[in-house]
Length: 177
Ligand SMILES: [Cu+2]
Image (cartoon, rainbow, N blue to C red; front, side):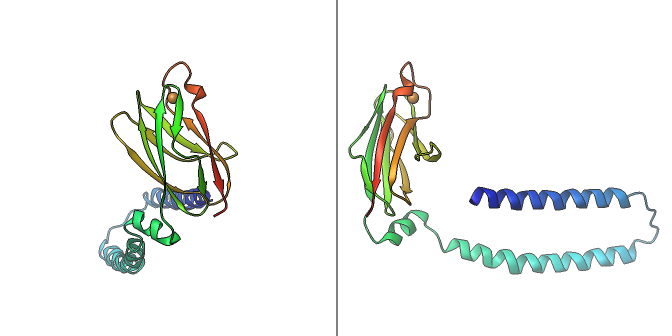
């Protein structure tokens, strides 16, 4: 959904930019000898644009800052504690210390590897990727995700790690809180 919106906004802005280029190109053949009035108009436009930006982007910036820091905002919103899943990648299986979590409450995956690099990808029932991080030996990556709906999710390895890489699948059950 958000991707569609972002795509629409980007396409619109790109379109406007293209129109501006076409406009400039079309007008570029005109000969102008007196630049003074043109300059005056351009400076006025620049001043207007400056204040438009200050009054639109300024409040937008302040508004988005209220979400910081992201981690504590998410954990605090639910009221409940964070559900922690310790995940270790092995050639060729996932080892999770729990496979059932509650929907609507944040889950923190602490992801590492016992051997080589693996990719820790969480997929929904339609095999759509919803969150991912890397499983690295000697390092623990923290991935926070809140499952909005109950259901069966799957963790698949996203990084080719050897012969039986395709076998690295484990299910996570997300249940009603
Ligand atoms: Cu793999």
